[in-house]
Length: 455
Picture 1 (cartoon, rainbow, N blue to C red):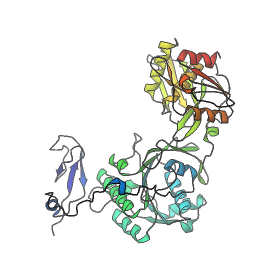
Picture 2: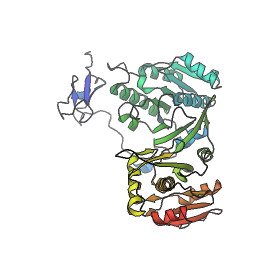
Picture 3: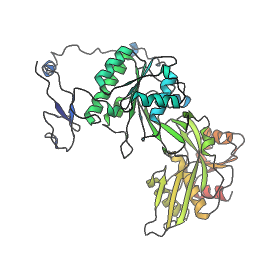
């Protein structure tokens, strides 16, 4: 039998080449050819004509298919279950990314320990030796007797081991170290990551085995490897925050079985990652009502969180003053400064402006506009906001304050933590009835600043 020849496929147009080159001969794109698994002999002939294709796919009507919800398998770690949408789904594939040393391997070893109490689980390590994993397990206080691990990087041998062990949960740490013997490229290359992940996904769907993949990140912060890797999996979780800090935040960037942008919050300690049951209290632990500080209520996934937004406005010695947002887009920060200049008469063109979300959170929703504006004005005027006051709302280019969704839930969260006054968009007043807190509705930036500083 003739040996299958190596193929190189263009990522842009899909053209197949027999050898690698810097430019695709079909579409002209540069550096888009990557190695693909060899095509078995005779396959092209079998698929060349529609009439000769064997094994046609069965077409069914959706009304004859049972659409019951897949049973969830709780991990035993509440914040992990929250991010996943209730627990592990049989046959689901989850990709977990994050900076080096932030706690990916630690968390997955804890998940395996919790899951192994009720079902079989296997940890596949491609980076660490079994001795290193055993030392970590003892340091975390886990039970080594129920932790089954294997050190292997060949995907064919991994699948053979999984077929023999028949675990219900498989952890792959990490996908960038796994390679296929059918490809000649080095582990971590685009073709190796893509084909290895595809083989693991096929096995997961065929056997209803849950697979957790650890993914490395690039210097830009994205998960290393082809973009198609994130499309193949069912959920993508990402660690946020500073690896040197105490708290870790896991965000669901994609989830076919749950809410997107759901947050799981953990505290790193000597015994591993511990779930934080009341994150609002953690993020407000250092709030003292100083100038340049505003408390807002963010909606992350299915729960509201109280977050402190800080701003520092100082006279600049530079020709182009700095606009720096930590946890906030710089373009949005520049827009808010322009709105303040045009509609509130506060000119800061000669000031350095820094905005920070305390706790390493990312202000991804527009409800953070009003608290960011309030924090900047508070620092600029060197005047603190009234205590026990929260604010949220979207700021438009015309200076209007637009309503945000789930306003009543945000107000209930603020009242639960003892806040007595809330400055919110006028549109969020309809139907809002929350006891114990004064609600002030505003329509414009001028009204909002008057309510916050003069009310």
